[in-house]
Length: 118
Image 1 (tube, rainbow, N blue to C red):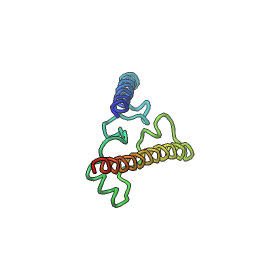
Image 2: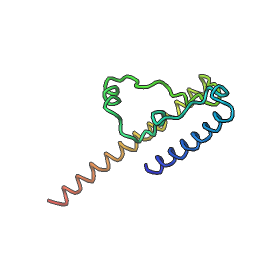
Image 3: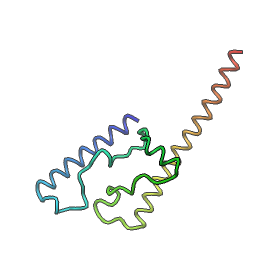
Image 4: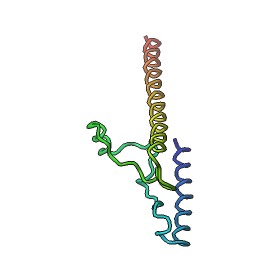
Protein backbone atom coordinates (compact mmCIF):
# COMPACT_ATOMS: atom_id res chain seq x y z
CA UNK A 1 0.00 0.00 0.00
CA UNK A 2 2.81 2.39 0.89
CA UNK A 3 4.56 1.63 -2.41
CA UNK A 4 1.41 2.47 -4.32
CA UNK A 5 1.02 5.77 -2.46
CA UNK A 6 4.69 6.55 -3.12
CA UNK A 7 4.25 5.82 -6.83
CA UNK A 8 1.19 8.05 -7.03
CA UNK A 9 3.05 10.84 -5.23
CA UNK A 10 6.01 10.58 -7.62
CA UNK A 11 3.77 10.54 -10.70
CA UNK A 12 1.79 13.52 -9.39
CA UNK A 13 5.02 15.46 -8.73
CA UNK A 14 6.28 14.66 -12.24
CA UNK A 15 2.98 15.75 -13.81
CA UNK A 16 2.89 18.95 -11.73
CA UNK A 17 6.45 19.81 -12.76
CA UNK A 18 5.62 19.27 -16.44
CA UNK A 19 2.35 21.19 -16.18
CA UNK A 20 4.05 24.17 -14.54
CA UNK A 21 6.77 24.17 -17.22
CA UNK A 22 4.13 24.07 -19.98
CA UNK A 23 2.18 26.94 -18.42
CA UNK A 24 5.38 28.96 -17.94
CA UNK A 25 6.49 28.45 -21.55
CA UNK A 26 3.22 28.55 -23.49
CA UNK A 27 0.52 29.79 -21.10
CA UNK A 28 -2.64 28.11 -19.83
CA UNK A 29 -4.49 28.54 -23.14
CA UNK A 30 -1.97 26.38 -25.05
CA UNK A 31 -3.31 23.05 -23.77
CA UNK A 32 -6.63 23.56 -21.97
CA UNK A 33 -7.20 19.80 -21.60
CA UNK A 34 -4.45 19.72 -18.97
CA UNK A 35 -5.34 21.09 -15.56
CA UNK A 36 -3.59 21.80 -12.32
CA UNK A 37 -3.49 18.56 -10.34
CA UNK A 38 -5.21 18.69 -6.95
CA UNK A 39 -5.14 16.04 -4.24
CA UNK A 40 -8.85 15.42 -4.94
CA UNK A 41 -7.95 14.23 -8.46
CA UNK A 42 -5.85 11.38 -7.07
CA UNK A 43 -7.71 8.22 -6.20
CA UNK A 44 -5.65 5.26 -5.09
CA UNK A 45 -8.57 3.04 -4.07
CA UNK A 46 -6.59 2.20 -0.98
CA UNK A 47 -7.53 5.22 1.03
CA UNK A 48 -10.37 5.11 3.52
CA UNK A 49 -13.65 6.48 2.19
CA UNK A 50 -15.07 9.66 3.68
CA UNK A 51 -18.39 9.66 5.50
CA UNK A 52 -20.06 11.20 2.45
CA UNK A 53 -18.65 8.49 0.18
CA UNK A 54 -19.81 5.78 2.57
CA UNK A 55 -23.30 7.28 2.81
CA UNK A 56 -23.50 7.65 -0.98
CA UNK A 57 -22.38 4.05 -1.42
CA UNK A 58 -25.18 2.89 0.87
CA UNK A 59 -27.64 4.84 -1.28
CA UNK A 60 -25.90 3.40 -4.36
CA UNK A 61 -25.32 6.78 -5.93
CA UNK A 62 -22.25 7.90 -7.76
CA UNK A 63 -20.24 10.49 -5.82
CA UNK A 64 -18.11 12.00 -8.57
CA UNK A 65 -18.12 12.32 -12.34
CA UNK A 66 -15.35 10.73 -14.40
CA UNK A 67 -12.17 12.68 -13.79
CA UNK A 68 -10.69 14.94 -16.46
CA UNK A 69 -7.51 12.84 -16.20
CA UNK A 70 -9.14 10.05 -18.24
CA UNK A 71 -9.52 12.33 -21.27
CA UNK A 72 -6.31 14.40 -20.90
CA UNK A 73 -3.89 14.26 -23.79
CA UNK A 74 -6.59 13.93 -26.39
CA UNK A 75 -10.28 13.35 -26.65
CA UNK A 76 -11.22 9.96 -25.28
CA UNK A 77 -13.86 8.38 -27.44
CA UNK A 78 -16.50 6.07 -26.06
CA UNK A 79 -14.53 2.92 -26.87
CA UNK A 80 -11.36 4.09 -25.10
CA UNK A 81 -13.33 5.27 -22.09
CA UNK A 82 -15.29 2.00 -22.01
CA UNK A 83 -12.06 -0.03 -22.17
CA UNK A 84 -10.46 1.95 -19.36
CA UNK A 85 -13.57 1.54 -17.21
CA UNK A 86 -13.52 -2.22 -17.89
CA UNK A 87 -9.92 -2.32 -16.66
CA UNK A 88 -10.89 -0.42 -13.51
CA UNK A 89 -13.83 -2.78 -12.97
CA UNK A 90 -11.57 -5.83 -13.36
CA UNK A 91 -9.09 -4.41 -10.85
CA UNK A 92 -11.87 -3.67 -8.37
CA UNK A 93 -13.28 -7.18 -8.80
CA UNK A 94 -9.86 -8.71 -8.19
CA UNK A 95 -9.48 -6.61 -5.01
CA UNK A 96 -12.91 -7.77 -3.82
CA UNK A 97 -12.05 -11.41 -4.48
CA UNK A 98 -8.75 -11.09 -2.59
CA UNK A 99 -10.57 -9.58 0.41
CA UNK A 100 -13.21 -12.33 0.30
CA UNK A 101 -10.44 -14.93 0.30
CA UNK A 102 -8.76 -13.16 3.21
CA UNK A 103 -12.02 -13.24 5.20
CA UNK A 104 -12.38 -16.97 4.54
CA UNK A 105 -8.81 -17.62 5.65
CA UNK A 106 -9.27 -15.58 8.84
CA UNK A 107 -12.48 -17.41 9.73
CA UNK A 108 -10.78 -20.77 9.24
CA UNK A 109 -7.81 -19.62 11.29
CA UNK A 110 -10.14 -18.49 14.10
CA UNK A 111 -11.84 -21.92 14.09
CA UNK A 112 -8.46 -23.65 14.39
CA UNK A 113 -7.36 -21.40 17.23
CA UNK A 114 -10.57 -22.11 19.13
CA UNK A 115 -10.11 -25.88 18.59
CA UNK A 116 -6.51 -25.74 19.79
CA UNK A 117 -7.52 -23.88 22.98
CA UNK A 118 -10.06 -26.54 24.01
